[in-house]
Image 1 (cartoon, rainbow, N blue to C red):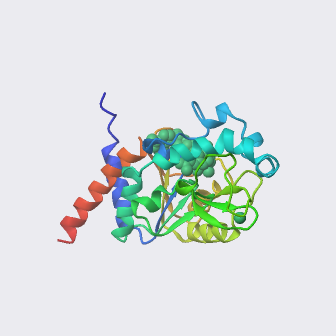
Image 2 (tube, rainbow, N blue to C red):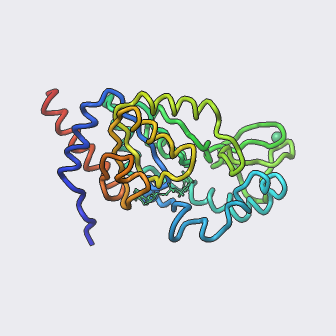
Length: 259
Ligand code: NAD
Ligand code: ZN
């Protein structure tokens, strides 16, 4: 079955908004990585249907019983994330940055796929799963290099390793929050891709942008709580498909105007 085509008039409008904008930001969530084979957490088929996040993705659970949290949550995530590769949406954002049309990506994702696609200015709002940190001595190592012979895996000092991602009950690094809020208040176009925008404080960023007069464009196959309230319009479709079409239009227009 061929996927439904994205509304061409809206794509043209988005291309024009981005080309005209002096400061464009992208906000991304789990949906941008679905086409890379990483399922989202919420909704049908999501991880939170199978396991209770407050039981297994809370910092208290990790501290009290790291073996169970590794066995139920982190081990499977590592297997999925070790295999995942960027898709056209991650690549499209990297291309926009390269063309000077995108300032920063602010992501809720922990999969490292924006950097893998070539994006340079990425704020990892919820930290990263690409690195592990020893809970005793603080030593860091790449998640891909961690072997799972025993659970939980341990540092050479004997301490337990944990992902450098934020668990429930942990603080967003204040410097990430502050810089994200400043960028949102100063942008004139914001792309909100693959996020239902219900997890705070990330969800407040489109509201800040809109309040400061920015154009807010959503890319998502479904409507979200932002749609019709905060966002100006929704490019309905999968992130990879929409971003590929959008970047194609922008590149074509740039070739015509800057030969
Ligand atoms: P979420 O609530 O933001 O929901 C995912 C959104 O993606 C939904 O709005 C859905 O309609 C949309 N979506 C689904 N398929 C899509 C596609 N192909 N293209 C574009 N959009 C699509 O996210 P969540 O799953 O509830 O995650 C909550 C938290 O967990 C966030 O911090 C999230 O980043 C994190 N998480 C990260 C990863 C990852 O790193 N890849 C994966 C799962 C969850
Ligand atoms: Zn250690």
